[in-house]
Length: 90
Image (cartoon, rainbow, N blue to C red; front, side, top):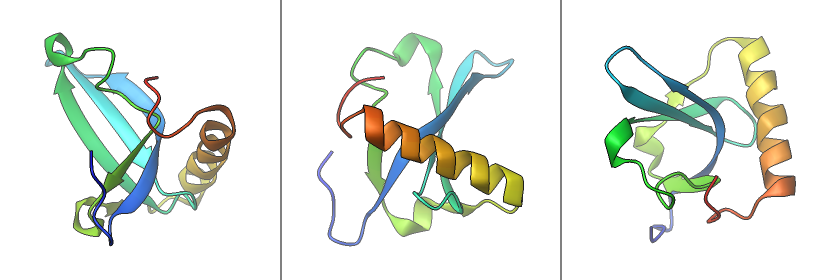
């Protein structure tokens, strides 16, 4: 993915599944205050689809309102940035 100049880097902080057989990926900003959510069909996921970080347009971000969730996301972003390069598959 080629980053545009004003894109925001977000890091994978949560992965889950729903009852429609979709994988739900949540990527957060380093401060944990904004979130990018992506849903993928389980069959469509391959090893290169889920990376440690993504660069996304600011308009694709939603606010994280709960302070405890912001803190959890901030801590997870810190862990991810320490342990993974942005483009590595996770």
